[in-house]
Length: 323
Image (tube, rainbow, N blue to C red; front, side):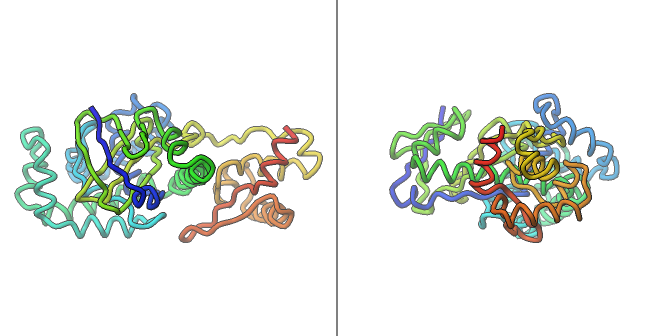
């Protein structure tokens, strides 16, 4: 069975990428529910699981709304309206959910499975506020400190896919996403446990890479913005704090620490993330980054309050030549 999107030329022209902190947050709840199916996230699960004891029944309600698999209410994961929305803006969208919408979506779950579902349906306005508050607390406790790392991986994926789209068009892009995704020229087929045929109504399609939903795909259809969440590339490096060793030739040319940093910048990273990964002070990292930027080997891009650094094509060529 498949979900099929009928994509006209205007829809293909409006394909855009976005990352969603809320999508990652909600997907991470499923990782905590069943860590064995995503052993790749075990370091994160080990770090945050002890923090859940302070939540009590509030988090139990959220787990009831987000079962380990199958359907979860769409209002919890609204398609991103901007390429890189803040968590606060996405949380505000959840708080603004119309109670009648929440009743329809939560009602698709089995009310007999949990008293929390029945309680939510009994007073959806209060339930929306309660769930939004819990998600905010959960973000602060379990994902906020890790978001720069996750965001860097997602951004690197988007850069890679954008280059694929520019070089090979829609066929190359969709072929690169996941075996569950098939593009036939005017129809995008996504393997799902149900069947649906949808048209994005000229709004295009939002492609959202995900680390915590990995390795599966997910879709959202009208009345929401059409969205395809796909597994991010390179997720195996997400919790790896040890960068590959720098080639000796590169180290001799620009110095051992700068060589290690340039190798680590295969994926975008903040100064703080580089300092942690390379066991250097943030001051030392800033000095090395300044030299790499002046030499045209690295570049920084501000995303919200953070600056993410990555290698330039010259930096890519230098690391490949020296390896």
